[in-house]
Image 1 (cartoon, rainbow, N blue to C red):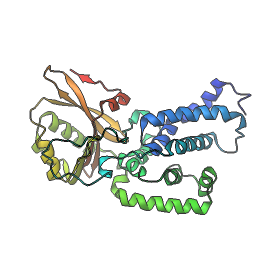
Image 2: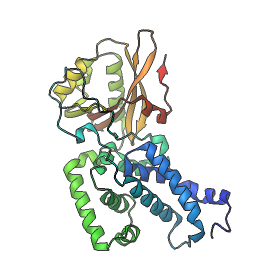
Image 3: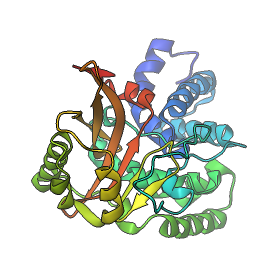
Image 4: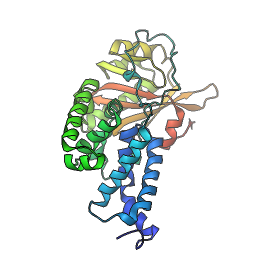
Amino acid sequence: MSATTVDRDEFVRLTDPYRRELLAHCYRMLGSVDEAEDLVQETYLRAWRAYDGYEGRASLRTWLHRIATNTCLTALEGRARRPLPSGLGGPSEAPEEPLRASATDVPWLQPLPDTLVDPANVVAARGSLRLALVAALQQLPARQRAVLILRDVLAWRASEVAAQLGMSTAAVKSSLQRARARLDEVAPDEDLVEEPEGAADRDVLDRYVAAFENADLDALIGLLQDGVELEMPPFLEWYSGKKDVLRFLHARVHEKGTLRMLRTRANGQPAVAMYVRGDDGVNRVHSLQVLTVREGALARITAFLDPDALDRFGLPKEWS
């Protein structure tokens, strides 16, 4: 079947079921929701133009992923990686001081709303979309990144990856080995494992929201792991350890009722949008916090301070 015998409506019907899966694939490659959406559009444009030559030797899903991978590799040429602050340097040792090192020129990693991932596959896919893993993937050269995603996430055979990327099978295996070793260096294994969400984790989220809304710092103490980390792109400062994280929060959380939290999900993880009450009584969005819950406590808080990030989550910028 080719583009000469299938009209555009039929092409859309056949290929559209893979759109969200392709978005997740492009997001893993680039660490940007905005760019991933653009590249999915480019993928579909290329696929439509090439559909006349599609002979069905590979499944339609595999064919679309091949086009998407090549589109991403082209887009990544000469482009800086998207990090989190913890990937650029050591933690700050002055949590009480005002944040100063705002790096608005850095192309920061972006959070991915769970709503953009196919609901039928979110449980299976979200482990490969965790914020820590996507951040770690950005540490890899683009080609190594593609090899690891195709082999370990999409479960392609080494020979299929070799054909896709113009490499030998031996080179694919070697590249995969190097990529896995690099991931072990930049992200602990526990950060890459998706734990099943249970009542205990939901309880942690409820208590975390209540602690902030009630300005109850004492309640936060029992919610944080000893090695908890807090980072807030675009600020370069980040904090490691319960003591420093609490010192940071103590200097900024003062009055009950000045903060409100709205629950959501990002990267297969619990998340909250934080709103700060202004002098006019209106709560305005401040940040989106993606939370890593491990063994009934918070292991990491990543607060994205770019209000535009909330546009992708369909959340209001004001909450009265």
